[in-house]
Image (cartoon, rainbow, N blue to C red; front, side, top):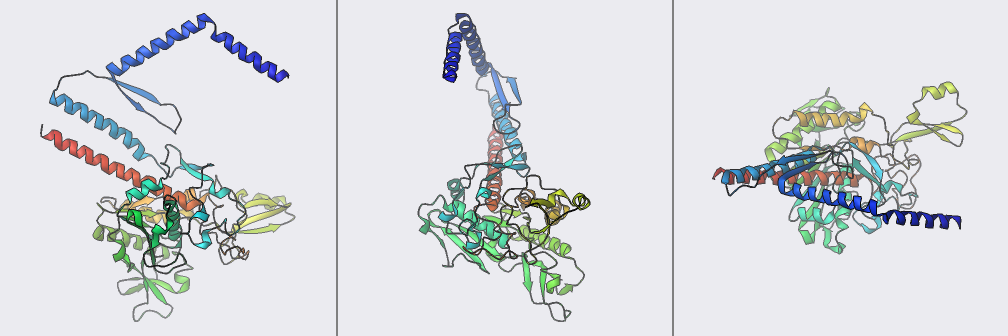
Length: 490
């Protein structure tokens, strides 16, 4: 009862203030003066606004330039139009320079972008919720750049951009993961799912070759070509040492490359197979020409392969037609969870806190591991928003970035950098939930691939943002060029 009386009292106090004629008249005069000032500004000022910071923040400053209305003078008209173009260019430039890859993960209840049960275009191993994963919070995180906003993914807009075009993913099974993600994202805008089909009638399962899905209503295809090394893998040349079982020809791109080169959008990835275990230890060495390079390291061979890719793009791909991207390495999150008790204080001090957690009064040390020696991620249900910088995580990124940076001609291949933002998402893997409704054995977890919906959707959102930004740049450059040509004749 007291709360209701207080609320009524506050209401009448506010009403009494509104009825104060003196306060009302002062407010009215101020409002009229402000309106008059703004009206005058529209007539006498050419104003421009520059906004710094994230969406919702106030403009950093207003810039006013005094302008005068002149007659139909060609030179002044040309100057005014050029000023407008330059002004728009400056605003666009700030967007173009925004780093989409510097940011943070934020909780967003509007996510995910699709429901896995509504998408029949993803492999069963990526359907974590249907496979029994008990939590779904990993689907609710959105990547937010620090100094700008990414455009929200719009499947209809993307499909319209891809009308009568080919979008091709080339790489390993993590690239396939991203390809299936895009199929689900785009299919969410198509009511008739039967209008989406694999052109050769092949099902979505683990596949050694390639898969091509056509969106009939848009006459576009979303394609995946399996090429885990990007270069040719084959038998060694005659006379090779006995321990050489097969070779990677780091100077020759994969045989199926002739099928990709006319695509309109190309997305490459590589790295997960470029390890000592999957190459030299398995009897796979590196070949240039007819010579097996027995002393070539994995890192050097990977660099040569990326250089081969860039040269191929320069010589074989029409980059005025085709947009080419290289999606950077996505870190894995295999950890060994060894719980011990009791623990001495000296031991506690010697272990980095990032690797330590408490489980039922025991100390659990999360050390390195992999898919075949007990590496696990099933206990991870939240992102690591402060994941430490680990230099070894960046080996693949640094090699690719170094090759692209040294390519001093027009940058024909653009990097989509997902490495650090993905490092933070230890919660996004299938772990035990990739074998249908029966959980996998505890010692055979999948902590390298990703649940769908999930983290690969963000990679595709970044690709979408970069793709739209590049189209905007191309369109603006075309407009400026046409304006220059027009006024050159005046």
